Length: 174
Image 1 (cartoon, rainbow, N blue to C red):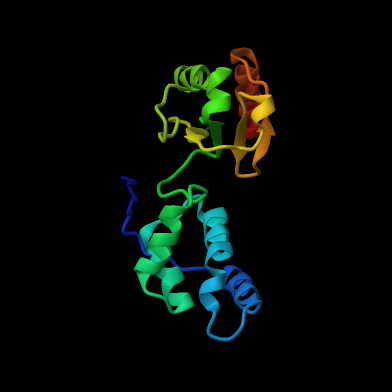
Image 2 (cartoon, rainbow, N blue to C red):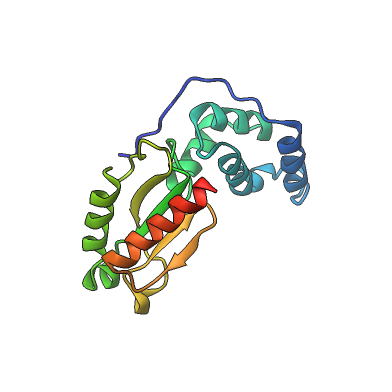
């Protein structure tokens, strides 16, 4: 079962964010504002780093939906984070083709290298990692993508993962 973290902290969207919501809702016919839910959740996640229960409630209020309608969508799609994540989220393809060429070993290596289990955040707040479904690069596995920009890295080895992590640390410290 997917755990949704609830901080209980109230959420107030900025006027800039509300303006972006308005522009998105304006793309759809009157009464079809639910169609804007996915892009609005993307904006919320970009702003806060994840989609909290109070944020989902506020989105429901904005779109004149029942909160459960927002929860159902946000928890269905793995692209939405239901708890805080690291600045860099390493997502490793865990489907058959990537596992055949070492994805599980790469995930074990990332866990050891970062010192956190899947879904946890490193103490410095920089990294979290998780296994995800197919990243559509079956011929180049093992593969991972890094959010929030979703840059792809293919043909991974322990050494290339170590280098990637060090490069991201340097990027974060600049």
